[in-house]
Image 1: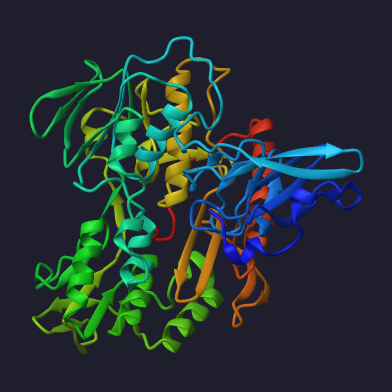
Image 2: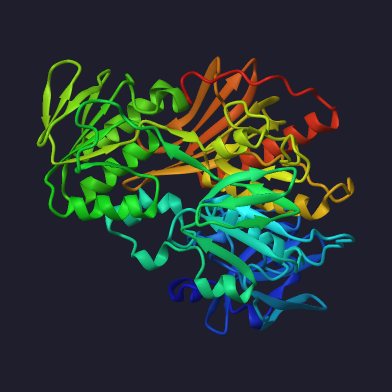
Length: 537
């Protein structure tokens, strides 16, 4: 990906750059052959790469070089400086790379290299002494798709079967409540891959198929369409489902939930004939839906039990800022209240107030889909319990994504989070561990720092880490001008950081937390039992 406006910036790197201007860690934005190129010095090595992240086009020149990778400032994807391959979610495709040559006191960028797609050995050749006979993935969402691609990228050429209950191809779920719902992103952007991609990489995708039972002894699955599928290794990535509201009228046709692409399509269709919308729940999904519906010109009211939007995640100051932002765009809040009944054209609140509504979207939380695992006898504790390698209580069966509860070294507790990037990264780690089997030298601990982003109108919030509770919040900058870093601390230790308008600071916080987490692992710190969050689940 290249931007013609960017490509004209900076020097022509093919003509050479003086070595003296390339100190260690320097990044120079220039161009070669009409394409934008980023020249980077890392130690005594020089690299030339594309300037736009292949996820959403984030500017890599504003990113961070860490080891032999560069990280995107927008959504923290990582790419190999040497090969351009995407080595960590959310990016799936590589960036372009160019040859670089040093001649005496000059550095020249040469020919552009061939680029392969994201499922072609992105992490190089892996030594698999005894590869699994077959691998089945239950779930075709973030974790499932990332796992399937990683298996192929890691050199596994055995059968890979991905089973998805939805009829649609695996898709970009975060966009369902953002640009796609707002009408700013066409549907062709939503699928992660084409059906031809899966065929080309020999990934068998069973869409619109549900697994009805897992037999961990016989190592086989039962399907709703009849028949079975055998496996040697299994990944459970079934995700989560919306919490349903149980009030009179909740089953009416104009009441919607947002979890799937079909849900988002239905809300878009309903919005074309609606004028007044009520969003129940001041959650991330609820507020992003509110922003998208305002973009479509609907009157929007948000009803929530909270005293401030997202206060239990971000604290009171950020919560007030988010409320003010939405109110400035015309959203009306009814906080500390709830819906008691839904009529044909109205919503009745606990306070007795009636709100006109011809479109209702409910976003009051989700629950992990653990029924299959529980029936199969796997250990369950508000999610499927996994070890540091994402393996469940049954050997050879792994879990990733919204359903997995894992020992997190950064918080020294067992946690389960519902973040897209976390799910993808867990899918990648689980895939490599399914190939490693019992080989301790190849098994990979999942120790990634949790990360997510939420977009409201023209403001994005990045959240790094995981803080279910805190005793101190430190704010650096100005929330009102959407330029701030917010740190959440417990007993003097920073557990999470939220950044607004400071993408680079978010990357730096991620790296700092990674170092801290590895120190805890090196010290063999015990992982304590999970303490339930304050109503987070």
